[in-house]
Image 1 (tube, helix red, strand yellow):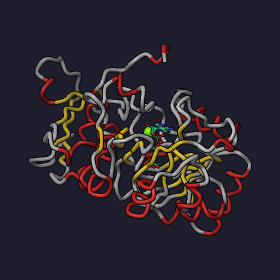
Image 2 (tube, protein in one colour):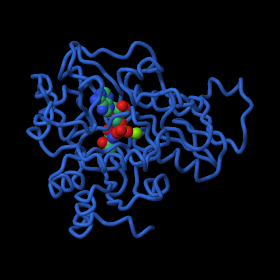
Image 3 (cartoon, rainbow, N blue to C red):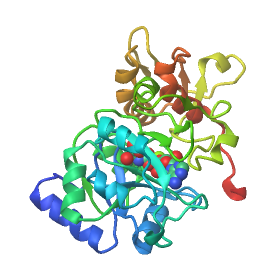
Image 4 (cartoon, helix red, strand yellow):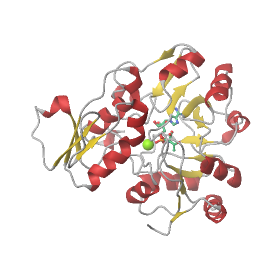
Length: 324
Ligand code: TXA
Ligand code: MG
């Protein structure tokens, strides 16, 4: 693999910190997916993230920090529920949207005056945060709209110009963090993700879900929830729609039952295990050269919420972002 993929040992971390201090970017593993890290409050560093990812400028970045006090220092207020959730789930795959501290300046400022923060549960990510001493903005380390990376190799495939990747092996969760807005009551789910709703409700009470289907309207409150996202190169078609379409071959299949076969990926029927392998399976089908992926949709239950969300977005037709 490329020389830019390095072990996260002392030397690898030193190189990563040097790049971050020079306002460059570094990809690193988290427990969810690989992130493309940059000094969160450096205009040059953040601009480089948007350029490399080809990310639309309206979509704000999550800031990663190593501790709860570091998180609080970025917030204008820190509600009691944020403390409870942080105590229960951090480090871990939960991103909290809070009101942004006024002293932070303009870089990364959102119209709503909020900031999204999390403490990642990965030793390499935490080592990098501590060694650099910087809050790290880190969106998933892939081109905008494409499948998030769960290995170092996926990062290099999607972002061939990335200066450095710390290789921490495959990500344990394999799906992005759950994004929760704690500025309102009831709390609002902005993006379903690795941390399930049941666990969140147990800790924090009722949670409002977006009105309908995380569609285009929801994109207003959570800018990153645009309709098409997480898409492989192949066209993704949900099985229930496959009959109405002329499918371009070769056709691959993504299922959760039955046996593996040529161009047929069968993932676990357990949602946590399914999520852990989903993006890798989409990458494998792309690498196999299929033109269409027909997806057996998992059950319509809350346990599958985040996965069904990603599959629907992967299946959405390409949109023209010129108006955004
Ligand atoms: O698991 C994860 O969250 C990964 C790893 C690397 O930490 N990161 C990630 O980042 O998925 P990204 O940029 O791909 O997704 C961040 C999501 C987007 O949907 C974005 O719109 C939303 O969080 N977001 C960021 N700041 C926000 C804010 N102030 N208010 C509402 N949504 C925000
Ligand atoms: Mg992403």
